[in-house]
Image 1 (cartoon, rainbow, N blue to C red):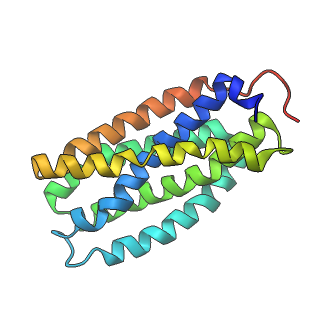
Image 2 (cartoon, rainbow, N blue to C red; image 1 turned 90 degrees about the vertical axis):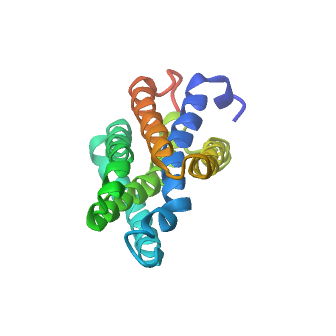
Image 3 (cartoon, one colour; image 1 turned 45 degrees about the vertical axis):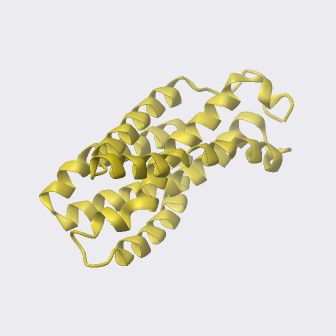
Length: 190
């Protein structure tokens, strides 16, 4: 861990985790509220979201083994960004099916991050100290918790979540560029 924290890639992985997590936690924290005008109760969305979160871990893990961590991360981030940018329009149109689909994609991507970041950590720093090393990278998950609070504040001030969705989508675009430049440290992993 001491060697890991001396590399810029460690901080990039923490940031990648944070950027993935923030959009997922926005949906997890507020989906039942913003879907309520379209559906009497948001429990169905939240329940289905739990399933997609779990499937996103398995599915993303599978295709990341095939296409690589970077491509899987960028694919997930791009899909979630499209959903974030589209949600204000979807919710304004009161299209329940599209709102449900966008949220399910976001749940999948959130779960996918929880599959990708341990794998990234192992790829970059080896498996010998993976538990401790991943524990440090996992700090990024906690940092992503700023978004549900920010989204709640935005909703209180503006009466809607639109700006929160746009911020989350923009941060996912930043994540794509960060994933493009973040490569394994030159020193071989143990």
